[in-house]
Amino acid sequence: MLLRRTLLAGLALVGGGLRAAFELSAQLPAAFADGPVTVSRESLEARESAPVATARLVNGRFSLRVAEGPGLFTLGVGDAEISFVAADGQALRVAAAADGGGLRVEGGADQALFAAYEALRSESLARWVRPVREAIAARQAAGDEAAVASLTEKEVAAYRAHRRELNDFTLAKLRGSAALYAASLRWDGDYRLEELAAAVREFGATFPEAEIGRLLEARIARFRVTAIGAVAPALAGPGPEGGEVSLAALRGKVVLVDFWASWCGPCRLENRSYAELYRRHRAAGFEILAVSVDQDARGWKAAMAKDGAAWRHLSDLTGWKSPLAARYGVTALPASFLLDRDGKIIAKDLRGKPLAAAVAAALQAGR
Image 1 (cartoon, one colour):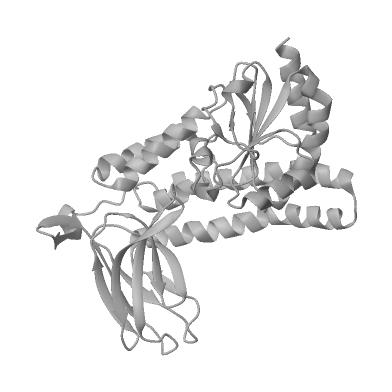
Image 2 (cartoon, one colour; image 1 turned 90 degrees about the horizontal axis):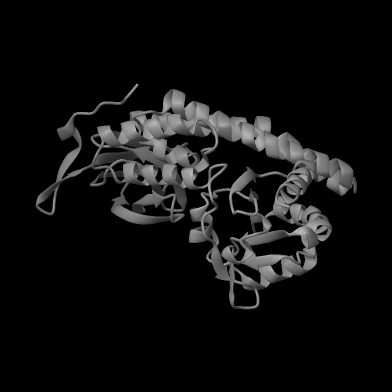
């Protein structure tokens, strides 16, 4: 059900004009020392936050009016931080445990929905994904590579089920809420996409001035350009030895576009299986284009050498701020896209035997 709000409820006089706003106040325990309070708007696209309001904590109290439209925010009180969702006209309260732990933001309908989403996300991850990851770690320690390969395939399916459960929750509970934006970071764009698009349109129609509405529209657009059957977006960037490496130069080959990082354990595990796949099929026209979201060039190059990753690599070394990952809507690692000889996406996030079979089939079809 859409969360309707009165237009004037969230308006504040700022700089001679009217702007949407919400209120934030606190009465915190003595464990919190007097000091600065900062509210920052979070950008899921840029993976960064920008301060939008400040106050001072005095005797455990502060109160401020934040002249911002609906969105995802971070509250910083001393060394404590918490993310929260707020929308026009809402009055939120900040609370904490007596010992200074467990900072909480309460009181707004959108924040309540965001808290419910975060609780479901944590529980779903623990139920679907963590047991498989723990089993993989145990079999790795035992040197059982066959079991690791089998479990890795199960991890892909488990993580997909986890993300689709988040899509289901979004569509059942978050329509019309600013929490829609917070949840969008982990949407599975291959599941119920048209329903997600409809929810985004509804939000934009209800809150036409909200910047997050435009950001959500852009996310849906990115999902469409990386859908199965779409021609993969252009990719080009610096290679490890300098010079430009591009996807366009590989047209006519079956290509696995793999997003990874040197610090990503599952990615490094995949590199081992890719090495055999690449050796077996390279002569028939198979290539791997690995796009790293690393920030440290030495770590990136060391990982390539240690893993025997002798295929093509590129990275702009800007980490999660990279427009390369954003172009493909990649928000978690590893992530991969299998392309046919015409550059069309034919599969995503395959591993192990399913990936090997899909590569062999694509090479055979392209003859």
